[in-house]
Each structure stands twice: as C-alpha cells, then as structure tokens.
Length: 115
Length: 113
Image (cartoon, rainbow over all chains, first blue to last red; front, side):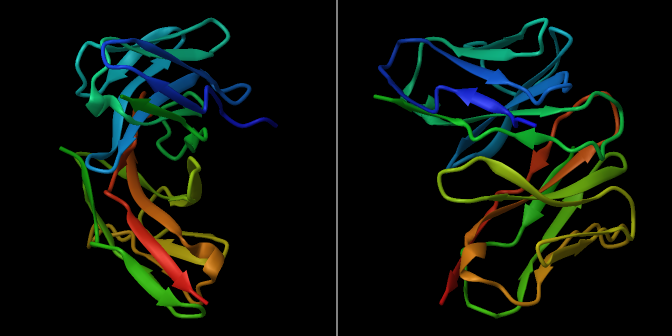
C-alpha cells in the first residue's frame, strides 16, 4: 500500500511569507505527527493530530500550526517565516493506540528554504 | 524527561568492517526503542525496533538488543556495505496515547569500497 505522501517536496519562500505543507497518511492510519529536521537541532517534534484534534505539541512558537481533516490528511502552516525555519519537515503516521511498539512511518519530507 | 544519546560521529569504515553505533536512553516510563535510517535526500525509514527488555530487533543484517539494565540499544552489523552509508537515528517512544518519538542527534556512517 502507499506510504506517507508529502507535498510539495521542495519549496522556496521569502522571509515574512507563510507556507502550508500537506501530508497524506498511510491508509488506515489515523494519527499524524510532524517533525522538523535541521542540522543544528536535529529532529524535533512539532505536533500530533488524531481525529482532527491536536493531542500533543512540541516546543515551537505559535507561528507553527496544523490541522487534520476527517479523512486523516493533515496540513501544517508556518506564518511569518524566518530564516531559521529553513528545514526538512517530516510527516509521520501510525496506527492509533497506546502500544508504543506501533511503528511510526515517515514520508520523504518537504524541504523548505527561506530566503 | 526523556532523552536519547548517540555516540559522536561521523563514522567512516571500510567495506566488510564490523559496525557498532552506541545508543543510550533515559525515560520516565517503559519505552519502545527504534533505529531509523535516513539515506541522502530521503525521509526516515524504520530499520528495526524492540518493545521490551532483552528483545532483539534485526533487519538487513543489522541487530540491536534492548538492554534495560544498561538503558542501551546499540546497533551492530557484522559486515557493512557501501550501500549502508546513511545517517542513523536511535529513538524511543513511551507507552500511552501519543505518537511522539524522541530522537538522538543521529550519526553519519560512510563506508568506503
């Protein structure tokens, strides 16, 4: 079956603009989470959505937001872009449940460059 | 809090050499442990996982054993190939109704022919 799909794969934005990234999870997966990857900070958790509700949030400013739709697809938005927002943004999906062994599957990511 | 510590990199090996990448963790609960691999220009792929103490995860010749007494999950491979060149991340996830992974900083492995 299809994996986690992210669009767009690459984009360049100007400081002060806003950006929206999209993610389609694996079919049947209802939990979607987002991570930011940078050379300096590594992989950092942004937030997680389940059933259209944010149920976990990382330590990022309010400029970073997201949402999930009824079909489990998710979007994240970054407003008032800063140079430091340049990063690889990874979306991940997993089955729902308290079992920590449930595998989290990642998409190929969206490369955002802010100039 | 929860954290994952990986050995400093990068690591450069010759083909067919033995590989060990150290990973230790601290966790407020009983975690599952994962190794993810990232090839150049790609996202993360699950390499292997272990969900309880003494479990051994294995895949593509890589192995890692969940050691609760030493809070470790070291990755090993007996004979590396050039195609194993990538960045390797150790991660943990706690039981509970959330999907947050806590990652180590990652280590770059380069394998020379």
